[in-house]
Image (cartoon, rainbow, N blue to C red):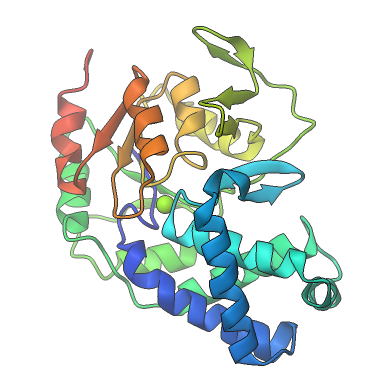
Length: 290
Ligand SMILES: [Mg+2]
């Protein structure tokens, strides 16, 4: 059972404001050297613009859409910062100066750095069912939980250590579900559309599947013959690839889950929408063919 961390085991919606505040502090003091109030006003204006037309804004990596802006609370924060920094030339220049040797591009590297630094500073905020669900999976003879996350493994291990668990949970950190590669030639079989690299869900939303790093992580995780399943609170990053690889995906519905994500998962034969994390062990036991 591959378990996403942020937003799935944790109440991301309660952490996003402190994360944004800290990120704006760092941008003001260390990166763009602009007044904090100006950055905050720009952040709020940008966030409003994104939410007014979420299908037009996304987290872009290597020219591809890694996630639409409205899929998760942290994703909305990341995308808001990215758009705010990209569209203002003075900010974009300052970010390019601060991140001269970018792995992706200066704005993506900047928002990654802000995310990893400041989420590591926040105290753990587990959902009420997190301990029970992980303990149930650890104790179940047929299930093994593995936390697979874009967050850094050390933060996740440190936070999991605060839960009273019967044994340690394996953590695969920094999995980079957002590592998009336009040159990757792998195609995924879709029952109606044939071999695809981009999954058209509607007129507005098309989910790009070119995520070789995440693909390899899933292939490795199933390499010992294990039957995989994935649970996550967002769709494009952790969920679309498993579904098209024939791996069950459970989408946890949260206060920020957009309808289009829940609809896409509910419409897929390998997808289930969880109303609460506490329902996961029973859903797994009820999975057809187990
Ligand atoms: Mg998540």
